[in-house]
Every structure is written in C-alpha cells, then in structure tokens.
Amino acid sequence: MPSQASSWQDSLKAFLHPRVVTMFFYGFSAGIPLLLIFSSLSLWLREAGVDRSTVTYFSWAALAYSFKFLWAPLIDRLPVPGLTQWLGRRRAWLLIAQLTVALSIFGISLVDPTQPGALNLMAFAVVMLGFTAATQDIVIDAYRIESAGAEMQALMSSSYIAGYRIGMLTSGAGSLVLASVLGSTSEAYSYAAWQTTYGVMALTMLVGAVTTLIIREPANPRPSPYQYSSGQYLKFLSIFVAGILAFVATYVLTRGISANAREALELVLNNGALAGLAVESLRLAVAIGVVFVVIRLLGLTPLYEKQLVHESYVEPVLDFFQRYGSRLALLLLVFVGFYRVSDIVLGVISNVFFEDIGFTKTEIAAVVKTFGLFMTIAGGFLGGLLAMRHGVIKVLYLGAVLTVATNLLFLWLAYAGHDIRILYAVISADNLTAGLASAAFVAFLSQLTNVSFTAVQYAIFSSLMTLLPKTIGGYSGSMVDNLGYPGFFILASLMGVPVLGLIYLIQRHPTFRN
Image 1 (spheres, one colour):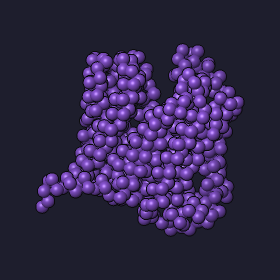
Image 2: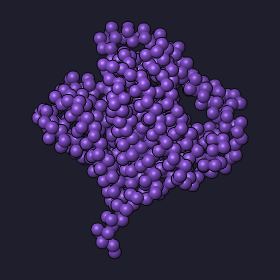
Image 3: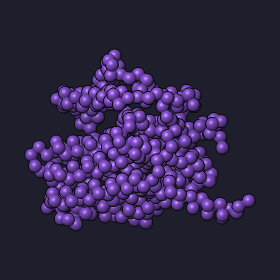
Image 4: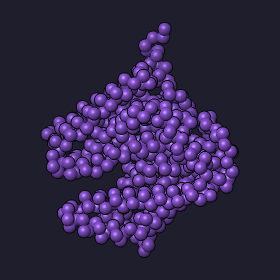
C-alpha cells in the first residue's frame, strides 16, 4: 500500500496532466472578455465624458452569459463548414469563438465614443463581445467535461479557475494600468491610449487560439443516428436567428412605452431603481413571450426540422430527468440555484462596504483585488486536491460551512472599522473559501452532466447557478439600508444554511453515496 505522503505526491503531480494544464490556458482566455464589458469599458466611457446612466446600459451585454443555454444546442449540433472536418466539433467552435472574441474587442478599439453616433457602433461591438464570449464558455465547458473522466474534473476546474482569475486581472487591472501609462486619465482623456489598450487585449486571445490548435479533440460521445443535410442545419439556424430578431425588435418597439411606464411607476413607488427593475423585468418577459410565439408559428412551417430540434433541445432535458427521476432532478436544480447565493449576494455590496468603513481605493486594489486573487487561486487548487482525495460531496459540505462562517467574519470587520490587518484576515478566509467551494461545485456540475449532451446541460446549470443569486444580489443595497451592515452580514450568512440541508438530502440518495 502506498504511503500517505506518496499518495499526496501523486495527487499533486496530477496538476501537471496535459488536460489540466490546458484548462489553465482556456481559463485565461475565458477570463479576458468579462471585465472588458464591465469595469474597464465603464472607466473608458466615463473618461470620454459619457453620462453614468448610458455607461451602465453597456453592462447588459453580459446578459448573454445568463442566457447562453438558448444557443448551446446550436453549438452542440451545427458543424462549422471546413473547420469541423479539420479540427473536430469542439475545437472548430473554440477557434471560431476565440477569433470572434478577439475581433469584437478589436472592433471596440476602433470606436471613439466622443464622436457623433459612435455609441451605437460601440454598443453593437460590445453585444457581439458578450455573445461570442458566452459562446466560448459553452464550448470550453463541453471540452472540459468530455476530455477527461469524473476523477479529473475537480483538478481541471481548479486549473480553469486559476487561469480565469489571471485573465480577469489582465483585462481588469492590467488594462487600466496600460491605459493610464499610455496617457489617459479622468482629467485628460486619450482615445489613442484606450484604442491601444483594447488592441493589446484582443491579442491576448491568441493564448486560447494557439491552445486550440495544439490540443487533441475529445472523442465524440454522441454520434447522431440521423444524418442531416446542410439545408436542414440552415433551417435549424434560421429558427434561432428569427427568435433573436423577434427579441431585438420587441425591445426596440417597446422603448418609448417602457420609458413612459418607468416614469409613471416611479411617481407611484417613489423609487426609481425599483420602478426601473419592474418595468425592465416585464419588458424582458414580453420579449421572451414574443420569441416563444414566433418559434411556435415557425413550427407550423417547413423550416421546422422536428427531429433535429428534438435532439438538440428536448432530449438533453429529458435525459437529465430520466437519469435522476423527477424528485431528485428538481432537488438538484434547486441546489444548483442556491449553492452560491450567500457568497454572491454579499459580494455584490462588498466593495461599497470597504469604502464606507474608510478603506481607500489603493488599499482595496492591493488587498481585495490582488492579494484576494491569489487566495482564490490557492483555494481553487486546494478544493480540487481535496475533492480528488475525499470526494466532491464532502468538499461541497466543507465549502458551504466555511461560506457561512467566513461571511460572519465581515461582522468583525464592520465593528473594527478601518484595520488593514483584519481586512487581510477576512479576505484570506473569504477568498480561500470561495475558491475551494467553486472548484468543488464546478466538478459536481460536471458530474451531473451527461457527456452525450454536454454543451446544453452544462450551459443550463451554469446559467441557473448565477441567475437567482444575482437577482437577489440586486437588492443587497436596500437590505443594507434597512438592516445596516451587521444585520446584512448575518442575513447573508443565514442564506447559506439551507444549502447544508440540500446537500444532506442529495447525499442520502444512493446515486451520490460515497
């Protein structure tokens, strides 16, 4: 029997497995686009003199990440002419996604927001970046699950998280530093500085593209028993395009109505933020309803390829419920939606909290953004290692318990006030826990996914795991106003307690007993 030290050594060596290393580079590639939509772009637009309300509209492009399950079946089914035969179905879509992400970032760099009509062009490029970046995520997740067995998923997710965080650091802090060095500040805006910065960020996508050309294609786990022609695939694609056009058209046509409704509701509620949320939620529901009607009507035409649509959209959902049964499947979906709720809800308001108790932006950047990044990476690797040795369920338990405990540490900081030592301690515990829990959670979601329906099922899970927490997180400011920071931190911690009960119920099922 190998010694305990030897066994740990073998586990550590597994981090050097080619598939695990590959996920680090793919994580970096996936981490680049997000902050180029959020913080970096927001600062660029503010320096260019764009008003704050217009700046925030651009963040909506990131909604593509929450709705990527809608086109995941297309990525799973449609071949890329020429490339699929050469690279395989996953690598072909990866290369297309990475190159279009780079082109979208470069397209943003070509637009000076101070010029007349330029914001419309930039909005188009930013939406394209959100769409192509979410597409890249779909294919990377599918590649990760298909390229290695369940025993490797925790390590691969740890490696992916490490690369992702470094990618975010590059496109976040890196782009801000570069633009500043090149001469753009809030007092002296320089389009050339931001143009060069976004051009450099576009070049960083070569990391992912080169990786795609080097690695091997995973085996296709689900060859379709049906053969489809190019014309049938085009019909399939046309239905999706029609749905997108219907969605966009609904938003454009309801612009005036929604503005009037928002003003009227704001007078009634005396709360502009709540009025905006209510109106935009209704607007989104109407747009989704219109898309549903359009697709139903297209189902009555020759465009509708029933078997292809059934294979792509219906079978992945049926498979999940058939494998786990209705009760366990619903329990799993509730768990997926709630596991990160405590962590995300607190995270939404954390930077505001740090500023409110007296920490400077420089201190926040050094401790929370930089030091915290490395603690998250360390937590991710620790979570992957523990999951590999002790099982994913046990690490999910550990992550849930630690999340509740570390959120309570913010109470300590709230009462202590501006104390850099306590900030280091809280960030160490919180980010280490976040990395550990995330690595185990991603590995668990990978195990839930059937390799025959990888792209679609994982896209549904990853959309679900952030949808509810981000929705609740939008009210975190109101919670703080009503409860104060101590009360809010207690509430955020309590949100994580039911997760322990959900894990217990899941573990009792024979499917998940160790």
